[in-house]
Length: 449
Ligand code: ATP
Image (cartoon, rainbow, N blue to C red; front, side, top):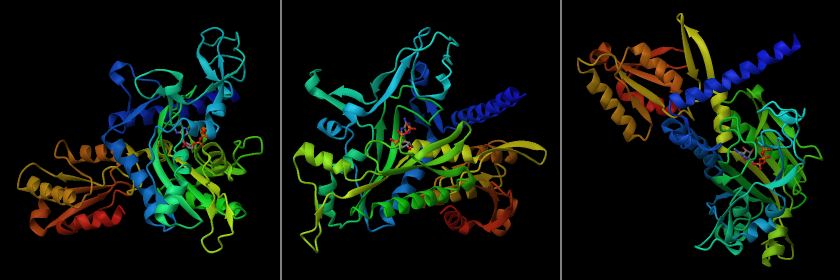
C-alpha cells in the first residue's frame, strides 16, 4: 500500500514536470537546445516568452540590488579570465564532484545522488554495481589563441563571483564607495555537471545573479541575516507562494571550504525541496587568496581612520536566473474548471509576466480592428509588451493567453464605438470591467508594476 501511494505521488510529481515542459515548448517559453539535431545534453534555449520572463526576473533583481540602493554598484566582468584566478579560488584543485560508472551500461553518475544509493543503476536496472568514485572537475576547459597546448588552457567561468573579487579595488576606487558596500553582477556560468536534469533546474550553461557585499570583520554575522531576509522578501515579491519557500541552513559538514555560515533559499518543486539561491558568509577567504596569488594588496583602508586596514569579509547572495524562472513557472501552473470547461493557467505575477496585455477586436469588422490596432500601438510606444490577436472565438483567444500567463485581456467590442470603453478581463479572477480606451495603457502600466 505504502509503495502504491509512493508511486502515485511520484507519478503526480512527474506529471506536473511533464506538463510544464510541454507547456513551455507549446507556448514558446523553453526549447531544447539544437533540437533538430536531437538536442544537446542539458542545455536549453529560451523562446519568445521565456526570454521575456527571464529578462523581467533579471531586471527586477538589478533594480532591487543596484537602482534602489546607494551601497551597491553594478559590474559586467568577462566570462574568460586569467586561469590563475581559478587556481587562487581553489576551483582548479577542488571544484569537483565524485563520479561513478555503472559496471553494466557504463553510464556515469554523481556518486552522491539518491537514485543510486541502493546500488542499482536507475537507467539500465543492473545491480552489478558501480566503479570506485573518482573526482571529476566541473569546469569546462578551452584554449586561448591558435595553439592547443597546456599553457593556453582557459576556463569558462563556473560562477560569476570571481570576476567581482578581482575587480574589488577597481570598483572601490572608481565609485568612491565605503565599506559596507556591494558589487552586483548578472551573467552566464558553465558547469560540466555529471548528472544534470530536471529541465532547467540543473543545466551545463546557466545564468547567475550574484551580489558580493564587502563588510568589516565582526559585522559579518549580522549582514548574513540581513541579506537572507532581503532575498526571501524579494522572491516573495515575484508572487511565489510563501508556504513553498524556506531557509535551509548548512550543517557543519555541508559548509563549503570558504564558508563560515551559509544557508540556501529553497522552493518545494514537484521533485522535492530544492535550492535556487545561496547566502554565504565567505569571510576574507577570497580576497586573501587573490592577494596571496596576485601579489597585489587588496586591503581596505578606512578613509577616516587610515590606521585601520583590513581585508573585508564577504557576504554573498548567489541566485540562479534559470532556477528562479523554473520556480515561478512551477508555482504559477494550475489547471481548473471554468464554466464547465477545463483551462490551464500560468498565474504569473503581472510584474514578471512576458506579455502584460492581449488586445482582441471582438469581430473583424465595424472598425473594431482599427481601434484595437491603435491601442496596441499605444502599448508599443509606452514600451509595454502586448499582443494583438483577432483569430478564433473570443473564448479560445482568452484560453491561449491564460496558458501564456498574460494577466490582462482587452476586448474591443460594439460598445467601444458607442462610448469609447473596452472590456478589461482579469486572468485570475475573470472579472470584467469597462475602462475608457484612452486610459487603458495607464491602467495596465499601474497594475503590472
Ligand atoms: P547545487 O548544490 O544544486 O549543485 P550549488 O550549491 O553548487 O548548487 P552554488 O554554487 O551556490 O550552487 O550556485 C548558486 C546558484 O547558482 C544556485 O543556487 C543555483 O540557482 C545556480 N546554479 C548552480 N549550478 C547550477 C546549474 N548546474 N544549473 C542551473 N543553475 C545552477
